[in-house]
Image 1 (cartoon, rainbow, N blue to C red):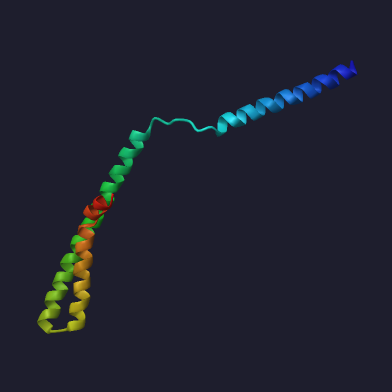
Image 2: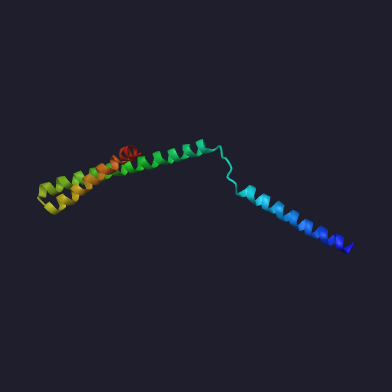
Length: 105
């Protein structure tokens, strides 16, 4: 009787081991998710919000740069004119950032 229990114990261990290996293999296999459209829609919404914020900030920087350039031009300060032109170029790039990103896609 003791020998029968020992043999069944080994068999049970092998059976449990194979069941655990099968379950692990099933869990590690990739599963299809059919929610890609919802995720893509949320990413597109986030993209549009970020591009709108960048464009608005670019418009503010552009207006600030133009105002500073006009002030520097009137006072004939070349260093301030150079700094303000950098702001103007940065504002233009920020306003055109969504278009540039779409061209790079």
